[in-house]
Length: 358
Image (cartoon, rainbow, N blue to C red; front, side, top):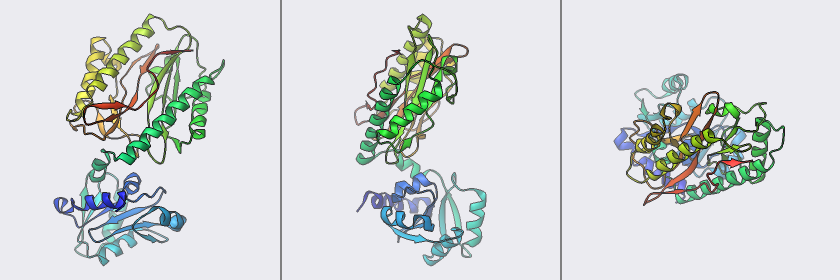
């Protein structure tokens, strides 16, 4: 049995509890998780009797190579084909991903199902399974992390006078590709000077400035699996204010990492970071969560945020990324990709956490 077959079989075991006879999976990361399909158009109809994958002729050859269940290739709207298959299998209660299906798609499918068949909303059933990574997934994430860190090292060696945020972001993404990444996990963030106080700044024409921070947030995707890291540069010799800000965020990040262990709620990790920043008078300068899960998506459950109750489990891959942002001065964020282990956690990111002066 392949890993994909095992995942589907395990999912089917939950159908009785969910009071469904079959599940329509339409969210592409979930489709990939259950079938291996890497294209941009595909649906999975999963029942206890069979798994049927639907796509269009563009992916006829690709799906034959990637998908290990029955494949139906057709043209035109897909919902009539899904409904016909549901009727053939006498499916009366069809589950669908309630957070992933538009009303238009829902209405189309409902109108085409046989009389008496019902649609049942299902929340997060595949996403919850994706939180715990298999050994193969973990090794892929490790490799993506290594590529990401090497691209960072190569990219910053290319920094030269007059380089802009966009120049450095392009250099880093080029290095990722050369090192074997599929693509960046997200648009690389390079924020210089006071713009480093913008947590998700888009790189632009701003030059890297002497005597100021440069924030670099980057991730590499390998075989569909993502990585994520943020590191700080300082062009010149950092002053006391810059060193203190960096030191406070680093202390918060290490405290959050120390709270990562099986059984702890994800919100406890956030509280650990936030408590340190509060001691330094920086709690209001931290306006996002402490981290998130990653895998086939760059942001996926669990979330390390205020009030979050998800218990951490061995095999979860998460980020730890507290920050503090001061308008007009700049911001600091320090981020690692971290694996929850049986006894605590392992920091996968090899790049040193120092305020790197250039």
